Length: 234
Image (cartoon, rainbow, N blue to C red; front, top):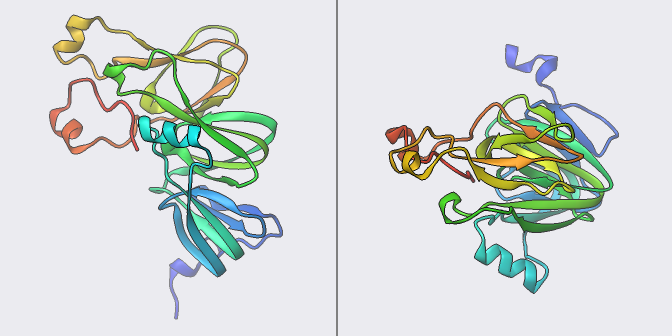
């Protein structure tokens, strides 16, 4: 059998590393220690692997998941073998945490070492008009894989105030404490606005990761083309 599909560029990447990007849009994790992954992120696996729903782990974390919109369901992936992860053909990036932490938009969190700690944090100033804005903070020693809808840009927030569209924000340094702000007055918002009504405001030592996309619009957003815009996807 012959096909350009079987070119070397499309063959599984063999490596002794535990975390290996097969391409810029697919990740392979070799199991030994468990990982936690976003539900639906697994696209293939080889070996003896199990997938189980990962509970909140504490009453406080459970209440946050129930009361917030950051319902980012996780699954525990365990066993012996290789598991391949991807999401909507988005770009995948690995972050090695060394005792520090990163705050990640739930729609950008792909998979991370189960030894890392995680929790849900509310962004200041996120009220009813924004639908509530919550991020998942992951910290400790280990690897995190995140996704970006296109090649991301890293902005340094230490020199001047930085404002990023909520949907275009992928992640930021866990030490930063952004607020949700509006660049529009109420009259403009009630008339439909520009679709750019709310942003994260960052300022301090650290960085924010910005994707060249505002996410995937819902049918209502794509048909109306106006309003407040989609404020927080998946």
